[in-house]
Length: 274
Image (cartoon, rainbow, N blue to C red; front, top):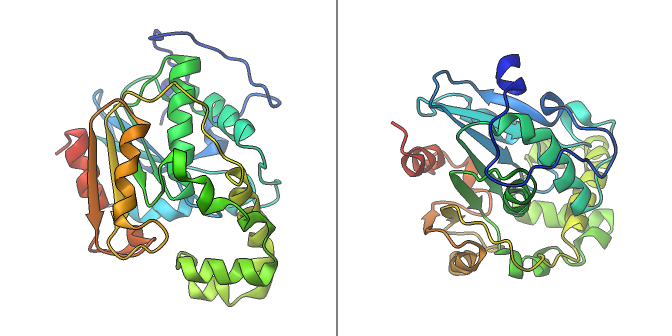
């Protein structure tokens, strides 16, 4: 993304707010890591959000093989990777407020959001915030391996309070953390506080009523996911007034890393890209 892109402003479709309730305005380059670049006036920017404890590197494999016209940016949240020294955010309202402010200069054209597991709920809440505060509506929202917002609390309730051993066992069960990381006690001691904070974001989650996104929604899941089984995906229909498409792919809760799961192919088709 060029400096000119970041400075460009489009006429809002609705109310626009530049206030940031939680401290100074966040910088886009700090909060989003470029994964795949694209040129052309008609490109679509895809903003991606990872699972609890996850990071921008989750989407690094998407740097190659994506469709022409797709520009990808992955959220880079405090408490992980290059921001490991920053304390993770513990309140959902603060996280959405900061993401909204950080992404504002980049939603000046066509854009879509993708979220996996916890990231799906973050993407959904951010979609609501963008429309409410900036009048910006994504062309498409992709949610992956997550219960619908009205049911998500049961997935996170109590997880933040688990002891280290129990939390590690839960992460092994979810199968999303590389074995070499799980077997590195020093690394896990760095990672666990961030994972615990991420789980805590949704421990008491109840989505505010109203303000349902009206963009098309694609719901993705793994056919062997025991955390969010395929038959739970249909409940996402209540989370949008737009069209809903449900896709079940090969894999478990982290089917996203299975090379057989052509997620980028689905994104390309749904966004009308070649």
